[in-house]
Length: 357
Image 1 (cartoon, rainbow, N blue to C red):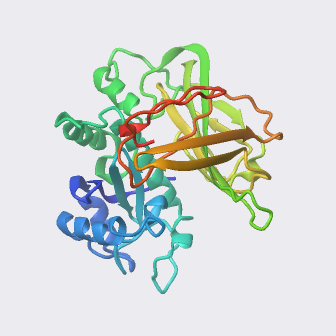
Image 2 (cartoon, helix red, strand yellow):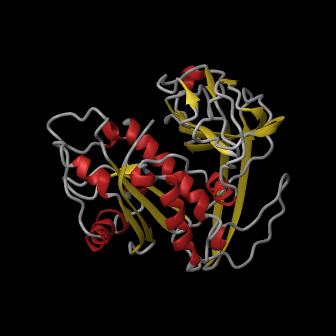
Image 3 (cartoon, rainbow, N blue to C red):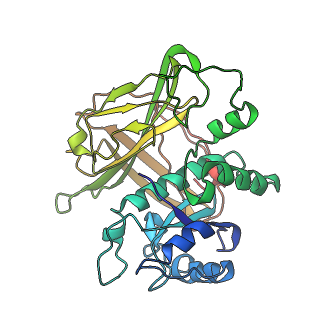
């Protein structure tokens, strides 16, 4: 899915803008459409973000959703929160069907291809930011500026994989390399490699509300990604089959996929980039059962001390092997964890970011 970004921002946990980038070329094109509304300055964006998002109560805050608005005519924004930073971007909607009269709706805009592509872009930016968290030295902003200039010139993302960008910056296209006339080189693979190896990593995140009561139905959804590194000779087409593709609600694929206009194909054929890349991201709410069930009891035995019992169980229908399973237990609205004494029956326990989980 091709998308053009009007502007993007990074805001800290207080809502202050620490980085912004606007794309005048995209903005000028957007002025021709009925949905266009001029973007305010960064100071106004910061003010609206604090009022509309940060000051909301936890159960009302829209930062748990990938799409939000900052005003009656200021939408739609894709939003991701990572490492105490908010990643915010607004795409141009010139290729999406927008209903008349114009009105923001989470249910409507979350299904737009441009929002899916923008959300994927922000996720790739979080991968880059993770290498600088949590200190964020001054060089971070300079590197981020370089990444955006290389990854999305004129506001249109081309390749947002930070490893690819660094590789091509250090190893530009060799002028001496000869390519035959019948061998076309894709723009995302300007350097040919040799090898016969494909590494595939599938990562899924389960978000569930489990009531442990017959009176209420449990609710769950699965977010997944498929990452690859293909060391193959030349530039061949590679195919991967997708089982149970009918259970996938949304699917966002890398530009290297051939025939990516098919919503949920049973097979993806692509010309892989040189380095590691995310082939596809997907969501599903149609799974017949929750893949993993959790149960916990927490008792406060002092002003700064609690006891915690957590039990996890995989569903009997889950027969696909996996390498590891992570469970994050956050303690919101509390200070950092000073000490823990835990004896897990399986696996290991470690502190989360800033000892808050």
